[in-house]
Image (cartoon, rainbow, N blue to C red):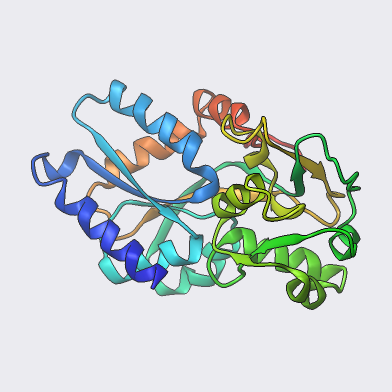
Length: 257
């Protein structure tokens, strides 16, 4: 159902382009966590390239890929972690890419950390905490959560304890802000977004467990606007683009891991 809704949304976006020259449009399939910096950079790019209009289809990384695959419409795929490129590369739809920075998983709690949660994945099993995680089948946040919790051998226990498996990072934070959970696992950068920073905060996990994940801006091989798409990708990877990513809580593409 969720995939069908995204697919319908993408088709609606494409229909809305009819009044604009085809070679001036870009459609970016963007994972939820990166929407804010990509939206800001899209508007800046449009100001610079006056005849360009950029639209975003946003959602879970796997759902977005499947929507792009079905429609064969769009120009750039921007998933929340590199495994999506590895998984689907053999299908021939994913072309050249550039590194747009890194994101990292963290524990996310109410502002002020009232439950005194420590930076340890085992906190997810505390009996006094209500827990929420992402769905590994729909987006990068759930997939990376599973990878981390599998490392410490507690994923099935945390799934059983969770009050819900959420589709993406935005849904997790909205639920946390509504008080539906005491503790969640989410992308660290989302806790620094302006609409979140006053209500939630990140508790860092050990980087050996929560390894920073590369954010790859990937050109789709069926893009009808390859030159414009490439120009936008270069813009995001530039120092100007990286400053925007840093502002939104991401590690930039020059980070030494």
